[in-house]
Image (cartoon, rainbow, N blue to C red):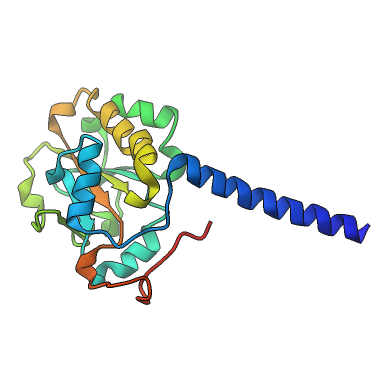
Length: 209
């Protein structure tokens, strides 16, 4: 009986590992590399995104932010007003199916700020820099703008990007407030600006799945 249980347990572990590997192969997920502005720009251009909407996580000082958020925020969508106040937060569990489709129907002017100071846009932008090396400020937005931050990760591949970031973008473009929506694609890949030279760097993280 114990022998059978051991075989069954081993089979379950093998099946789970195989499924994870299969999902990674199908979706194009890879262990993360150390990216550069050029590699990030090349990736988003292939997916039809203008590079001036792309922001990479900036410097080794932001490593802790990356460590905390590189997985959980891969599908995050966060909506802010022009004052940088968080209006809507759609975490990973909600950023699919009907919720993503409902992005076209969200009444943005009717949203009230969520009182979480740490999630203000100004706090978030501290961790990111545009690929042309420009830092974005709240003053760069016009009054009445709605800023949508869509987190993405190059290591998750084209398929994931198309089914998340591009899907959300297409839905937002159908929103009645589309002309006032400014989309920021917040790339959370490890970046060469951190001074990382190889996988031997102690800050290098891998996906544990």
